[in-house]
Amino acid sequence: MTFTTRFAPSPTGPLHLGHAYSALIAHDMARAAGGRFLLRFEDTDLERCRPEYVAQTMDDLAWLGITWDAPPLMQSEHLARYNDAVDRLGEMGLTYPCGCSRKDIAAALAAPQEGVTQNVYPQTCKHRGITDRNPTDAVRLHMNRACAAIGGSGLIFSEIGDIKNGTHHIDNEYLIRDVGDIVISRKDIQTAAYFLASALDDIHEGITHVVRGVDLFDFTQVQVLLLNLLGQKAPLYHHHKLIRDEDGKRLAKRDDARAISLYRSEGLSPQDISSMVGF
Ligand SMILES: [Zn+2]
Image (tube, helix red, strand yellow):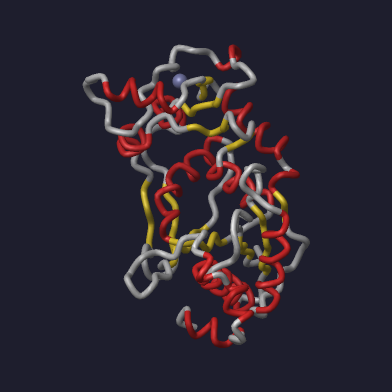
């Protein structure tokens, strides 16, 4: 299989140094392997995403010397495919609808309950069948059943790169206790949550190596679980370090002061940006 990787920003703000670092790593790996580098925009949240950020991101990437080997995939054009996957998980009996508001969940968590970890959904709607789903409901994964469906432990995924290098096991106990019945289809955007859409696209695009920041490492177990439930083999993962500012603070997406476009307007070169992020 041809080495294929991707850079998948969400167009909710300008490209910053952290993005540039991630894109450069993925792009350089693809080029060194004689493989493919793809661009994907995670733009399913129409309220927060802006077309001007898509255009600016492509312009900034091109300026950095990054080329992509196919037209960018726009997730907003693939909602039916994500919804099909959510439906399939439902047909397998692994999901249930949830109409809880944040307030409902907070109230349920405030009531003393044995065995419920803070911030994990208290399973208020667990008794509901997925066929009773209202248009305004979210869809949650029944984590106990999902873990049982793959026959307990035994699922693994492989990581290259220096931070998490090696083989990682899926930990059912962690998924049930600390992740819980997560939302796999959001009611506000009426389609799959970020981590599911992203994993589905990795399969759809034939991604062999997922290159991304280590802040997304914790999603990997859930993604590998979901892919296996859907009969798909997970790609290899490479989680890289995050770029931090002088105070050690992670560069947030909305930190406009660090936008690549700002550095460009100040006359910095692509080489300056590369060396700022340690290339
Ligand atoms: Zn609920």
